[in-house]
Image (cartoon, rainbow, N blue to C red; front, side):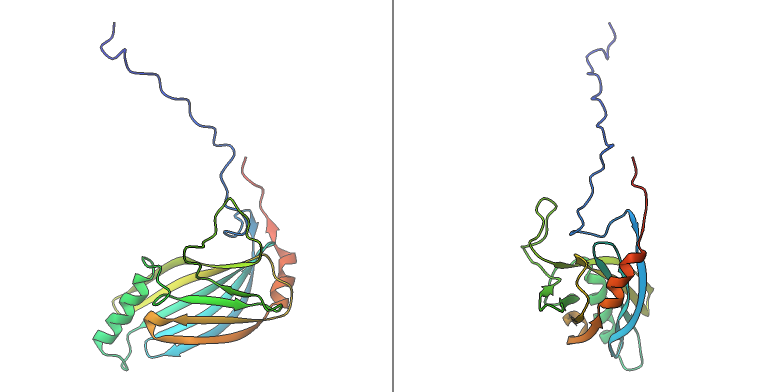
Length: 202
């Protein structure tokens, strides 16, 4: 008898053919090539900080807005002031504090008010929300000792009705007070007709 004969046989591998996928209200579909619609609106610009709404990636069931936060050393800032801004921008990846982090909201054409911060009432995969939702996600960051660029995304589900919407924003940790801009949703909604679908994996 082998010394190792008491080792049990390995468990059969799990069948992963049915891939677990997040529902449409949670994140954009991975089975679609969205239509990118350039927006290029500067939301705020102040010493050392620029916040931009770059574009909207339009999917068949929703719209993902892409934001850029740029923090740069300038002659208008002391080194200590720039360091404070730099740390606030980089710390947003580890924080979930609306008193300091980027916060985005939408008022849709029908009056619905959507705040990207949900606190303890967050979305889950099991239960579809009763109405539209707008959730903020990360995208990545890069930079060096004198600058940092942070990308963030906001996912609006479902695809809204055409009309005028208002985008609200604030970034307390970077000294950005609450502001807003108007957005015409019709070009974005119309762009959904150009979405291409990718064959789902087996």
